[in-house]
Amino acid sequence: MGVTGPPGPVMDRDEVDRALARLGAEHEAIETSLLALQDHAGRRLLEGAELTGVTKERWASAEASITLLWTYFDAYTDALRGARDIRSRRRWSSREDLAELTELLRGESVTVAGSAAGTAATANAPTLHGSGRLSHSFSLTTLVERMNELYASSLDMVVTADAVWSALPARIDLLAAELQRTRRLAHSVGVRPGEHPAGDDLERITRTLTDLREQVVSDPLAFWVRAQGSSAPGGGRPDTTVYDREARALEDVRREIDAVLTVRQDAEQRLLKLRDTLSRADRTLAEARTARGEVLAKIAATEVPVVSGPPTVLQEQLATAAEYRRHAQWHRLSPLLESLEQKAEDELLRARESLTAVTQPLAVRAELRGRLDAYKAKVARHGLAEDPFLIERYDAARRMLWSAPCDLRVAGQAVLRYQQAAAELFTAPRVPEQGGLEDRRGEQ
Image (cartoon, rainbow, N blue to C red):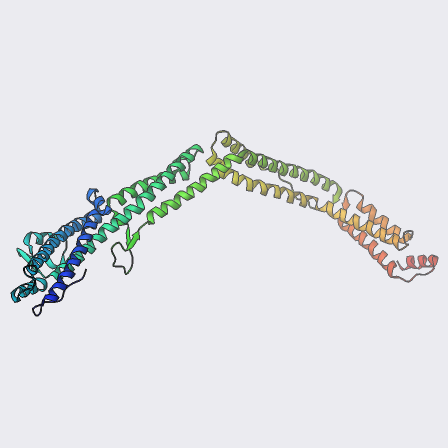
C-alpha cells in the first residue's frame, strides 16, 4: 500500500490526478486484502471455535481490529469518493477546488466517529489509546498506515491459528489411528495395562494424545513457535514437541510388540533348542563325573575338581516358559526366553569347562604316551631299536604310563630320561657295537 506526501502548497491538476490514481489503486488493494481476510478459512474457524487461553485473548483483540479495519476502510472510501466528486465537477478544476482537494488528500481530513475509538482501544490500536474524544481525524496517509498495522496483526493471528489447525490435528488423528491398531495387536498378544509396561505406555499415550488434540483445537496459538527475526504474518512453525515425543513412545511400544509377536511365531522352536542345550549340558556334566571317577582310579597324586550337578532352577524356569506358551502369555514368555537362552549357553560352557578340567590328567598321560611312542619310532629310524639300554628306559617309562594308578610326575621324568638317552645316541659317533654297548653301560 503506497502513501501520499505531507501537507504543503496547493496541488495542481496533474498532482491531484496522480494522487487520486494512487489512492484508487491503494483502495482496490486494501479492499482485496480485507475481503481475502474476511473469507480466510482460519478466520471462519476462529469464529466458530470454542477458544481458550492465549488464542481466546488474541482473537478477541483481532476481531476488534478487523471491525476497526472496516471502519477505517469505510472512512477511507468516503474520503476518496468525495475527492473524486470534487475533481469531476469540472474538467479544469478551479483554484478553490484544488485547495479543497489538497486539504482532502494531504490534510487530516478523514474523521472516524467516537464509537470506533472504544473499538480501537479494545484492539490495541496505537493511535486511539486512552482517548475520550468523540471523533478522531486522520490524514489518508496515516489512515493507510493504521490499516496496514491492524491488517498485519490480524492476518498474523489468523494465519498462525490456521497453520496449527492444518498441521497438528491431522497428524494427531493419524497417530491416534495407528495407536488404536497397536492397542488391538497388543491385546491379542497379552500386552495389557497392569500386566505389561508396554500396555501401560499405550494407556498413557492415549490419554496424552486426547488431551493434546483438545488443547490444539481450543488454543492453537499455544502450539506455535515464532521464527526468530521474522515479522511476516505467520512466520514460524507449529510446536510438535509433545506430538513427536508420543510418536517416539508409540514406536518403542510397536517394537516391543513386534518382539512379542516374534516370540509367538518361534516359541516352540526356541523351547526345543533350549531343552537340547540343557540336555547337552547335563550329558556333559555326567560325562565329567564319570571321567572324574576314572581319573581318580587311574591317576595317582592328582587333585581332580569336583563336578557339580545340573542347576534345577533352569529346569524350573524352562517349565515355566512352557506354561507361558500353553497359556499364550507371550509378553511374559519373551523376556524369560531371552534370559533362559543366555543361561543355557552359559551352563553348557560351564559343563564343557568342567569336563576339560576333570580330564586334564588323562590328557597329560595321553600326551606322554604319544611322546614316548614318537621317540620309539625315531629310535627305530636311527637303527637303535635293539639297543638294550634304550629298551630298558622305554620299558620303564611304558610301565609307569600304562599302569594304574599312574604317577604323572614320575612317568613324565621317565619319558624325559628316555628322550635324553635317545638324543645322546643320535649325536654320538658310531663305534663297534659290542664295545660301544659296554662303554655306554659303564658311563651310565
